[in-house]
Amino acid sequence: MSQAHYDVIIIGAGIAGLGCATKLVESGIPADRIVILEARDRSGGRIHNAADDPMLDIPLSGISPAALEMGAGWIHGHGKQHLLSQLLSESKAGEPVVTDWRRTQFSYQGSGRQLGLLAIGSAMMRVGFSAAIGYARRALTSKHQSKAAASTLFPVASLHRTPEAQMLLYTQAEASYAAPLSDMAVSLLGQNETQGIDAQPHEGMSWFVKKLVNCAPSIRYRARVVSLSHASPDESVQAHVCCADGSALSARLGVVVTVPLGVLKNDMIKFSPPLPPAHLAALKRVAMAKFTKVLVIFPRRFWDSGKHGFIVVRDDSAARNELHSASYLCVWHNVSAIHGAAPDKPNALLGIATSHGALHVDSLTENELEQLVSQRLCAAFGLETLPFKPLAILRSAWNNDPLSGYGAYTYPTLGAQKADFDALATDCPPFYFAGEHTWLKEIGTVHGALQSGQAAALRIIEKVLT
Image 1 (cartoon, rainbow, N blue to C red):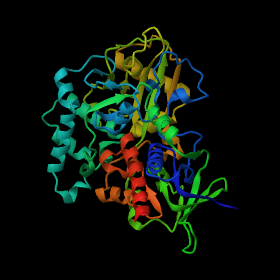
Image 2 (cartoon, rainbow, N blue to C red):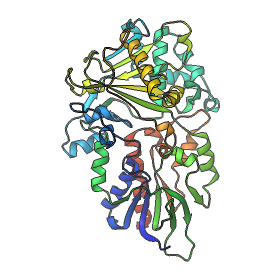
Image 3 (cartoon, one colour):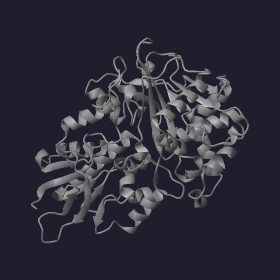
Image 4 (spheres, one colour):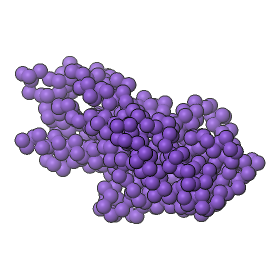
């Protein structure tokens, strides 16, 4: 079978792949010499908006697209110097809507009684979270940090806080990293440099995907790559790519691999020769977080439009020792009201399930999920029953998706070290690597993925120039 020849082949049309492609074109490589191979029938990867689903048959009129993001949902650290914020500003796309986490209602399960403001303030401020991480690190020598789970040290770091505040601190940690504290490495917590405001573009994070697709070279959809191999020394190309449909391509300069970490962990792409031992060891040690969004659309709003979020904790003593308060749909975002939905029109709440809770939610039948949603929302608002039956309940189910690597994003896994993330980011020419898992200082973020793709492009350009 004849091969299609390109200068650069990019695997994955997520934000990293699109960022890489556009940077290559900007740097002078002709667009017709670049191709993006995407296994799905769409671009965006783990950025996906329910409004773009042609099979969805529910009333969405009046609900902002930003409220319908089933994947990455926020610009973390929005500001003038932020890469994503700059893209919005340059395109005159309008100022994004800020989510003010201070406007969060914290309630006890069942009674709906709200927690005291002092408990909330000491636990949910980011400085409190950062202080707990710092305390945990100081409590151990660097030799032992990689083996220490956050769950063993956060209680010590939180002794000066109330039990309610400790529970909320756990909630913040587990909701942020989408993993139990018992599975997080103290040494890697806080490596992410993202701080500041969380915001959403009016059109949702999918705006960035559409923006980059418009500037990107050719994208081949339903092109799942199954193997990558070095070319022989006497060939004019450096690498060969084979797809599941039998098609074959070759690259003169290199192949950029931007697939999710889990795709590599599950050996869904065969490398010949195999990846180096350090890379393979890192793939074993670093894991993907389990994170599921549950979008519940009601015919009208019955909750407080002034709150940006709702968090439910149990008020029995046993529950205060649990480290999974965020797991089972205990965190809800007031996504449509934030974006100005009229109260008498369809409104949506977005629930988050993490870790074991995410796997549980993804395993439920539609009826079981509706029952769980009803239980959790009644607990949040102190209701016996919900006043309206949901028009629709959608879930992201990334954990069941092989193309997302059976997970949502990478987290600081217990047993992993910084060297493992360095290995994941190390190129093996003619193969170059990008994706949020290769960008430790912005791990798990859209802008981290975008920066990693742009950086991979610049490494290829540097090679061409030398």
